[in-house]
Length: 362
Image (cartoon, rainbow, N blue to C red; front, side):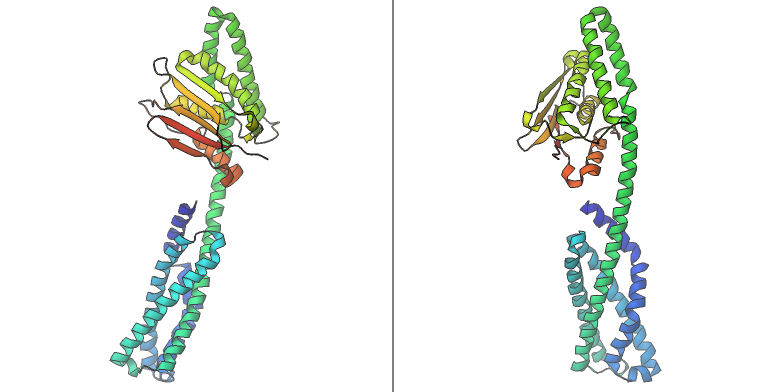
């Protein structure tokens, strides 16, 4: 999130340099800053002599624009260092310090150069330098406030855009999950297995039908029109997944092995419904499943109260792209429902693929 916000801020600042922020600086700061600095440098001569007025204003205005450009360049790095909303004080303080150092440094260089060449009769005087420094410090403080306003506005726009994207993704996810309730491929495979069992093992076929009905009853209950909540107890999800595992073991026979190792103390933890089914389907979708190379899936609770789903890696030669109904859908739903509390961790090494899910306790 932080890296996304900084990239957005940088893009926004790049577009703003020649638009809104420059407009605010030019309208609110430079109209009084440039004449005041010129007056402190040349005194009454600035307003009396038209040559000094035009030449001094043009030169100092150009130098102020240069200082402003440098200020906005370093402002991006301060935003990267303190990107969060609650860090406004740090941002403003650092912006003020940096702006002051840059502006005062440029002022000293300019005054030294003016004095050396006696530009428009300029003579370096201590009291004028002191007043010029205080003037630039005030301008730096105002510029820091304007920069913070621009950054806060950018954060608000970014948050609104992210919220809109999440809502759209949630709607798409819900649609995909509704479609997944009666997955035609899964149903077709189940019916094929059932047709074989009816002839070869009638008793197994009867149990197969019972488990299949439990699977579809659960799918309809958690995503039907009468659903009560967006979460279910881990105990309910496990009862469903045992029936689902039975159907998969009948279908793949020795090609798949799914083991459940869940401590009873975590059974009341809450989980997004159909999460385990989605992760199992994801493993089957992306790995070879055969009697010669069986797919091993372990579902267990960890000592820290998380749910771990791990499978051995034996990737298909033809890679299958992720879809919203797969792993990315789970990540999106947990993020929408629980923000940072619902962070999902994914690990992959040479031999295993692991997903760590939080168990939500309410």
